[in-house]
Length: 165
Image (cartoon, rainbow, N blue to C red; front, side, top):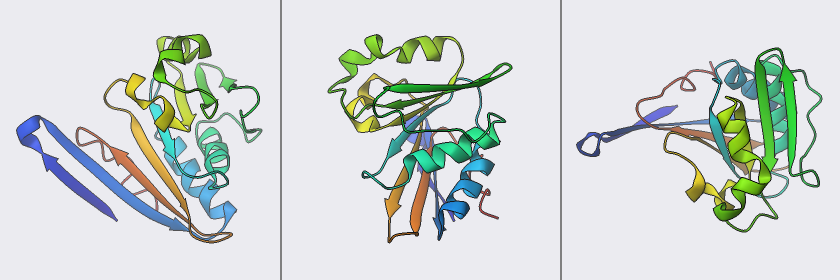
């Protein structure tokens, strides 16, 4: 279900859409549909506790972008890159990064400059370094298999409002 937040007096029109998945396969399927709508240069700010399913979701994004399903957690590498032709997905784990002041040394801005889509786990550590217009995806773990997944976009961007249909 999509909800719309109208802050038009400030020039902002936000879209918030929430889905429930009941298995890792459903989470990957939802993310695959989202991945089909990811654009070059999109920045995805993940929110969610450890074990919520951020890497599983990223696997679906990669599939939807045509990048295959060989996605692993970037916890120890900081960033994993998935590339096919002109499409690139950079998957960052900012758990050990303490502030946006460190984004330069992570290669984050290099990926932005090359037009890659960027998915960032533990984005709350660095979100003040993102440009406006990023996509927030919050993954809440309800139980072992059930997830509540919320997409938040700005400026009337409703491309994720119907992917659960």
